[in-house]
Image 1 (cartoon, rainbow over the protein chains, first blue to last red):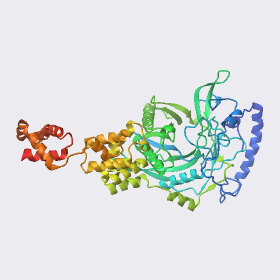
Image 2: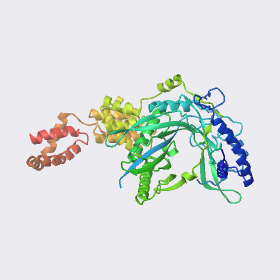
Image 3: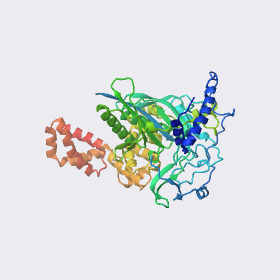
Image 4: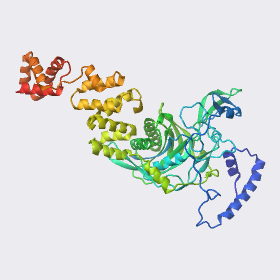
Length: 95
Length: 487
């Protein structure tokens, strides 16, 4: 199994990770190795095996619907790069 | 060429829980920005989500109401994408194992027929925050967006239908039915203006009779029934124009601007995100057992369809009135209160759907804000039914109640002199007096044919109502007049 340079560039874009040409070449090899391992796993017989959602053999505990949190805006906004009128400011986004 | 329109909907329903789906932050609407966004909602390192039991209860109640299979084991997945109002960089949602499996909803169509709309599934997920693209700038003058994360983590169910609707009318009928269902269940406040329900519409066209579906577009985030209807009409026309010119539809997501009746492309399939779903390692599978489901079942109220059938059966209402009254749970309960007190259910239905609803709409009030109680309206119905007050007089009583002049129906009738006289002897005396002064009109009446007589009757009613100071029972006046004039 091989992975193309285009695939790597697309995945990097989706993950918002900047990679240069040299890194792409390295990743091509490293990710190719990982995919080869996945290929080996694909050969395992999983006919009667349920997909595993979590390694722990336990079920989720649920929480009662009661407000337990207080307003900590000041503390959180103290570590934010930019705020105004109670809002977190980020570079302009238009989708 | 003739075209078939195919419509499927995805509806985001905000659940009316007190707290968020994965944290104990309040979900109350309208708070100061970011005062209801805690460490979990902000995706601070080291935090762990803990699911809200009530969100599961509400989702299961919805599933039971649409006759769906309940997912005994549901798994949360991460849907990965970057946007500033999504602090974690992924939305926690369900994909492979949703809480609600296939179900169905019946809709009533304007021609009186019904149609079944199949529900593909409904899953639990979290809402994102809100981006405000207003005039914010950094120190270099670059435009900035403001982010309010109060909404981030609000529990949603996303309801996905099969492509079973064929026109805007059916899609809107379905949307209204779903609104009626979730508000009757009490799992959503149904306030569309606050975004409590948001609709995405998938639309495609195919040549009439063809089985294979055409390429579809998705129009996102419609938050009123009217915009939804307009957006569908707009998109059907846009696609038809392209197809009839020999063009091809591009699979894309579109945004509709209701104020301008315009739409624009948001992203095409090529640009579509690869969401790289995977099971969320922070959350274990949730198991729902029989006792949980039975507890949810015991919380189900009478649903709109059942209530409508009962209104027709118990109160003899027609289909249209029963539909309107049962569609809104609060209106339905108000009607039952008025009908129980006022005895005459049909009269109660007429007043509630007429005068009462008109006043609520005119003043943009909900039933909870009504200045008139069900008991008061019931008392007024009793007085209309027993002829103590004419319908014109009843409107004056209604106005007085609405304005809060007095809270007692009988006291208002007395104070305003609206008590209707139904004493036949007294009325007959008045008729004799009035007729004595109208010999010409009497002759005219007696020479006229039936059709003309009906018109001429009004000429006697005016002076009679005047003579009785507006208190004479018009029905009795008419009867007495007829007897006297026609022998």
